[in-house]
Image 1 (tube, helix red, strand yellow):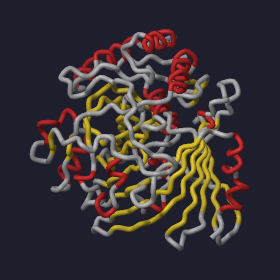
Image 2: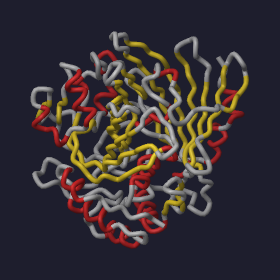
Image 3: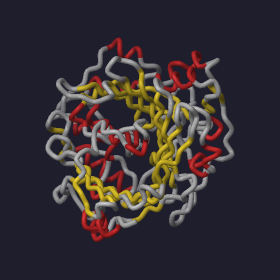
Length: 460
């Protein structure tokens, strides 16, 4: 049974440009709301993915037209920037940030204040997120059959698409983020760079990444689904000291009874070991302490540490349509203190705002998190984290790749900035390594994502 969410009116009034439709959905949410969700999707007011179809009042956010842009991208070739001819419509700096404060996250404001050269080049908003019809069909079915149990920690009845296109609470919205469509089988090679507070740039890891999503097996169904929504295999090829290491992880739609699992292969030991700590706030060694395992894609953690509260919708300047950023040489992408501002495309988009606060008796280095989920993809594009003392600690940015050939739009590269100690990490960087390959699901490929395959493949 769903728990209805009734946001206080002062909170609704405090959110800039809160969508009338979003506010109505939040207030009217009821425990037996699935029929209403189906009706909302069929009304023509929402896209098949649950976003508002119409543009905003002043036209700065256009209506969604459902047309996938042409990006090329056969095999693992880099996908071109379909909007390369666009020019910035405005630039936001520390000098004029106050004018746009209502559309800026706290983390973005902090970066503008901290780094004099940082700016936002804001381009025309392009609603490029389009997905296959088969995904839309499953989203429509999920609206009638998906539900949460165990205080928001377990998804039941969902398959093949975001489970809650009309979310009633924060846990539903975060599950949409994690279960959003990123392809069926995805492969790419990506680099991870750490930039120290002193200005040093280090390539800490080059990773061959393979992802498979049983949740999106077109031959599957909710009745046959095992509950395992994703497997990842990461093989490290650089630097030489770490080459040959490999990691495999498994994620489940049950954060209550099945925590994230992982196995690690270390060449020196020549055996696979169950990894005891690959979730929550365990530091990612290759990120030099600037990001934890649950910071991947801005959040891929178990929700059992947090109560997720749905705040509402807000129009926010976010990084978006960044095929151009991912195609640049890394020397042109990385700047001083942040990514090179001239390399990043920002746009105004409607986002669902979710706040995560620690559950009673639970611990995490991030005592509070605020997520900005793009309404067209359901994926987190900005995230802010506060420490136990209530200080704004870190801010994360995720960069959307558009693959019109699939079609899909998904975050790929992401960055975390430590606002207190300085230093930052840029992960999932494909700038020097090629593009992303998308393949159809084949159950036989699951054998490549086993501990036995990890042992045979992870050799230096």
